[in-house]
Image (cartoon, rainbow, N blue to C red; front, side):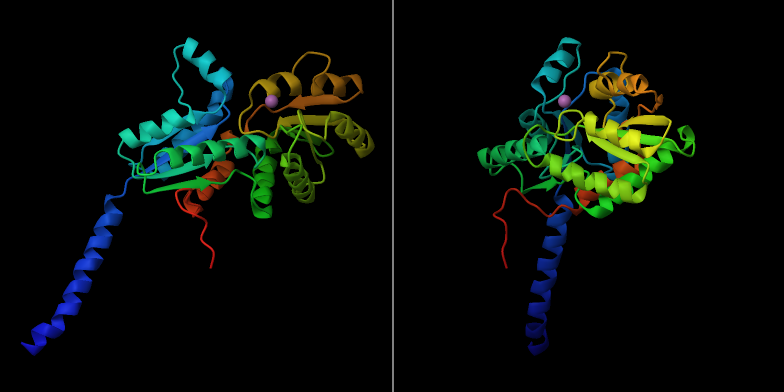
Length: 296
Ligand code: CO
């Protein structure tokens, strides 16, 4: 009888442990990948690559996409392709039985687009508080110096075939006319330059424009410039503003200044070491939007 009584706490503990383990097992994690979007068919290669990598990294989990650009969603819908908004995508995940959602930003850095995305997800989470047990927010690509160094290595190996010694590499980031995104891009620029002094970074819509980059390239002594996007997809900006034929493109302006120009139109999302960073951020996120931030 004594022995049996002593056994009771162990039994209770055992039941509790099994219950917790079972609860964990029954959680179904869904992944929501969020990008601005693109309607350029060749640019979709980056998204296809990311999609395939996530399906491999999260087997059995529903992987759902959302584009934040309404214009692009409408354009694709007119072409017969349905892409969800954030709200629709969360709805889809709930219908697919997800109890925990991991939202992943596919932005290069935490600029304006990321901030808006985070707010949308947060508002949705508050609107339907009982829909998911947790909604984790995965940070964008460049969140640490280590991330920037990894991207620099990925670019170096990706561009190796097209580069000869003495060539400069001019990378086009997006940038924001307002907000702190530009400052993060400056940090990335410093890390890239550290990794490879031939890397030059400027933005198409941000504070550091092409004028500064052109002046820098002239000073560098390089005769040939290899152009590449510093964006997840090689979409409209990469094909027109960077490598396009019109007078204002970086390619045209470089040619006009006497440089020989080469281009590599591959988005960062087409490079697997870059996709691995996104996947790491998805897995590592402990930032549950359904809870108040916990202070010790
Ligand atoms: Co733009």
